[in-house]
Length: 193
Image (tube, rainbow, N blue to C red; front, side):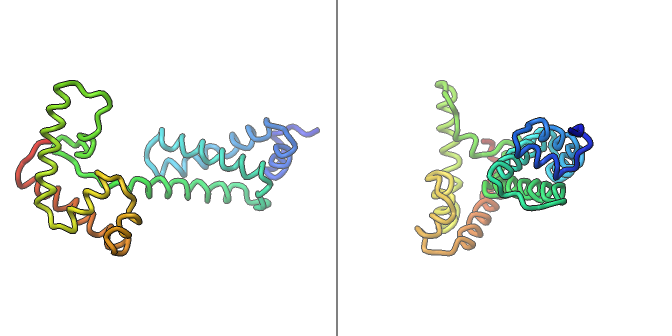
């Protein structure tokens, strides 16, 4: 039997499918630098790149075990395409959660989430909630509804669009303007949250 290192990618994949777990280790180490580097260039975060790299090979293994791999002689291109899609999915998840930053750089909606609040935390939370609600009340009604439904009712944009009888794009647009207006109000009124 040939040494695993001398086998082609396709031979390693076949060996893995036959039950040789070491073949996957050789395949991963053979292409790790190239694939990891491409992920890192996209996400610019070492730990996130490592997580995505790990998710990639979980998907690869699942595909091999399910017998769905059909990309003969194109393993690296196929794996790079999956890695790219995982990066895009990560950024889509981030984009769906709009962020308004305070003057200290914290997300204002984090002010509303405390695990086990103390009495002081409860007072600070109530004050911050009151400040945020006062600002939200200054928004136009359509923007105010979006903020409340998204951040306080924790609804998805598709659900919000059904409730408000508008398109998802309209709901997203209203959210964008609401967040921009909130940010402007925070700066104008010099509010610290």
